[in-house]
Length: 87
Image (cartoon, helix red, strand yellow):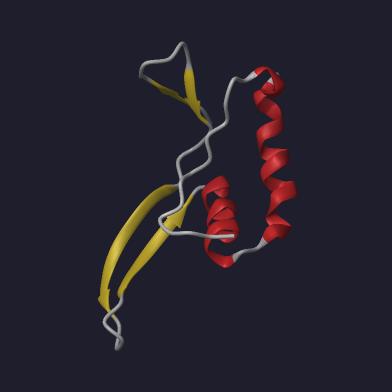
């Protein structure tokens, strides 16, 4: 799936949405907010990479990006920004 991004550039695309739905479940016994989140296939892979440090998902992410075509001609690829410092 592709989503056109409007802005101060010639053309911008988002490959997919990360979160499809999210329902707040309340707080747990430690005071942390809990959510029931449904992610796209790419969203789940990015989640596993970012938050679970699961580098084994990288080949699948690359596979999902292949249909975009001519990716080597892109001026920039901007990943989903981290909410905190991560390796």
